[in-house]
Amino acid sequence: MGCFVSTPKDSSGNRRRPGSIGEVSVYVPGLRIPKPVDFAQSLGDYLSKNIVERLSALRTRIVVMAGQEGPTITRTKRKSATQHGGSTLADLQQALEDYLPVLLGLVENGSHLQYKIQFAWVNQEDDAEETAMSNAWYEVLSVLHLMATLSLSQANLLLLPRMSTDGHQPKVSEESRRASVDIFLKAAGYLDCAVRHVFPQLPAELRRNLPVDLAEGVLRALCLQALGQGVDIQLGMAIDSTKATLAVKRRLACEMVKYWQQAQDNIMNLPLANGWGEKHRLFVKWKYVEAKAAAYYYHGLILDEGNTEKSHGMAVAALQAADEYFKESKKLCETFHAAPPLSRNPPLWGTMKYLFEKIPKDTSSKVRVNRDLYTYERIMETAPTLPDFALALKPDEYQLPQVDSSWRTENVKGGQSGATDLLNG
Image (cartoon, rainbow, N blue to C red; front, top):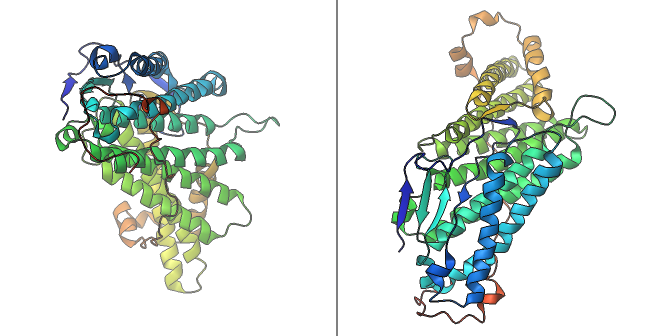
């Protein structure tokens, strides 16, 4: 069923970490880097030279590109982001997409070939520096995770404010915002596919021994984070629209809270460590609190539209809660960026730029009582419950590609396991 090997922390120095990653709008975990594999030695007795060389060439391309660019690909230098960084992401993504259909031939129809090669990857969030497993489904899972990570990197580059041509404050164009939502849904689709279709193919023992980078909770959390940030962009566009009502903005903000709450629930008890892991945990906590500030703000404005004393009192309580969450989110933001690898907050834009100005102002104008009488605990006790809305944003329906046509003429020596077709059935 495949064996596994975990290499202890920092035993061979493969895990290179940047000291600083620049501006961060989207959390991107450090890239897991594949280590070289000798396909000829493992598969030479079972497959033709042609397919072995093809597998080797496709994977070697990924090993070289990821090894060279991995440690720097998450850094965001404003001048090079759309040139060197953007093209590198696209090239590596294409290399993974080219490799996957050929790789899937190793697991087609439950082939015994899936256990013949030990695939090794360098981890980022796990305590073990690298994890090797003799199961091709582990390789498929690692490829999908890397494809999702690259998509999140691409979204981060799009959402870093650029200096506008008119010389005004840096901003993110509407085109970039719309494109980023599509990319978030694509990243979520890769992760959703990994959890629903690849995870079940791994034996229970291997699932238990996966690095925390690939733990089911981490994959689900990253998927929910992508959806949560997609809604954040939608809320920012609604704020900019004269047609969007307060009800629409509140709904988006409340949905955002649910995505981030579920993301936090998924990683709460996982042993995330080693810099990237702790930074991941802090990012989710920060964005969850930030989302609650937005949701309580819009809920308070809608409650304030009521004509009763009770509705006004509830509005005040909601706005006070929004203000407290807003102040807490600013502290969490600083903590996140100070955690290694160091990062910076880009210039404010979109949802948070608007709320940064509005929450303190509207709260102080609506609250007519002496705020010194209200402790944080008292404010949270009196805050009204947020409305519950169904989550509208869903991951893309990504499906594993068909096995590459080069496998059709392949006469695998050693026979098949007789299992049902896992890919095309």
